[in-house]
Amino acid sequence: MVDDTRARKAAMYEQFARVGKALANPARLELLDLLAQGERRVEELAQAAAMKISNTSAQLKALAAAGLVSSCRDGVRVYYRLADEQVAALVEQVQRLAAVRLADAERATEAYLGDVSALEPVDHDELARRLDGGEVVVLDVRPAAEYAAGHIPGAVHVEHGELTAQLAELTARLPESADIVAYCRGRYCVFAPDAVRALREHGRPARLLDGGIPAWRRAGLPIATGTRS
Amino acid sequence: MVDDTRARKAAMYEQFARVGKALANPARLELLDLLAQGERRVEELAQAAAMKISNTSAQLKALAAAGLVSSCRDGVRVYYRLADEQVAALVEQVQRLAAVRLADAERATEAYLGDVSALEPVDHDELARRLDGGEVVVLDVRPAAEYAAGHIPGAVHVEHGELTAQLAELTARLPESADIVAYCRGRYCVFAPDAVRALREHGRPARLLDGGIPAWRRAGLPIATGTRS
DNA sequence: AGCATATTCCAATCATCTTTGGAATATTGT
DNA sequence: ACAATATTCCAAAGATGATTGGAATATGCT
Image 1: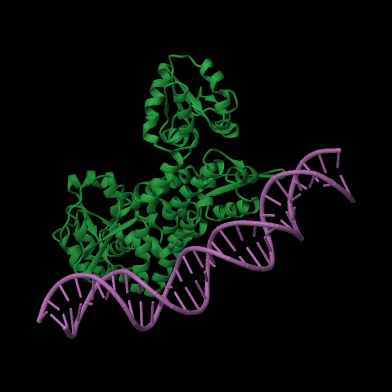
Image 2: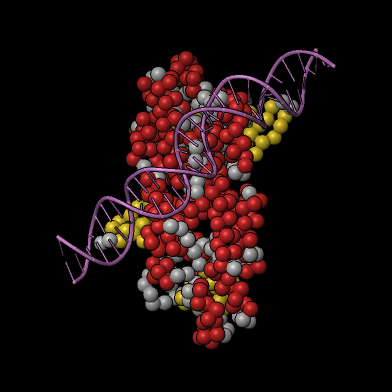
């Protein structure tokens, strides 16, 4: 009887640990970050995360077994997506806790992203308010597919990789008086920090959207889809 | 240069995964649940989780290395505690996601806790409101040490294990008109569900506090400490 | 100093996870 | 039916993690 309860308790925690195990691997965390931008095919994910396809498939299978992602087939292609928007929140909490509690993690994020606080992160609420005013241009520097899957309404899209090439054209296109706020995949993505620095070097005042699109989305702010800005 | 960025990204995700790895084991999740009640010694934790002491120590060490718990020595004893209240929230999110997304997990919680919805869970806000009115008695059925470390002000304390023995005395002591709301360690603890069922069988209307003390605490509601109710 | 107690360390075993290249499978279009 | 393509499956190897009993360490008490 007592053993029975204990066995049931153990079985329950065993189940909980299935989700924990899914989060216990850097490659899987990166895949989850990518999927937070929208659904993607195995091959795309493999390329974006610089992983072998067979490994990507195996990790996605593990994530699916833990209930964190789901997939659907479209012909020969298989699209994966987060099973639930809570998953993105969970991953972000893991990341944030690591960054706050582990000195090495904080160092690693700083080494990858640089000093983000110097880029004067703008709160999503503040940006939403200023967007109505019209004195701000929002810049989305993620890959095209991610922009299409969901972006801030009115955001100008330039891919991170092409920013340098298009800097002159872009800054000419944007009204000189407008401040620029750039965003990307989220708090631990380099694209927007890079972009803000590039714009500033080019003499344009620019700031970072704090938390990227996930924070915006989670706050229930509007999202536009499709390739037209 | 590109390799450099990639290496830094990998290093960052490696760091994030340290937290994930800490959550990847049922024993550690159980320890975190216990520590969410307040600080505890290694031996106590080992007993409460039915683990060997050496293993408990090893798992606590792993949790500390992931920044999830901290310890402080008091003479020969070492007390462990959660490093941060966010840790409890993270663990609960893992559990909830498992319970929602994994059929086996849902089954396992049901097997351990029984049908909780039949116990008419009371929202913490609702309880707080009704507490002011005074027409409700709150019952804490956790171990004495956990009650002492923090309980709902005015809660009557009876240990889970002694509930059956003290049922008659207890129900006699409580005003007959008052509803009873029982709580324990949280959403995945059996103590309060057991207690509610026992009280109902004894003819007393009783309900469950939804989310137990962690939800109460996280809502910023008042907490009392010490052994006096 | 010597003893008792709580915790940690250690070594060893067993189990599980990661990653890879290549084969197998499923689907579409010809 | 066949070829082309995207994905999954598989086997194997190396790496990492879990758990244990017992030894070692640290602290307090007499």
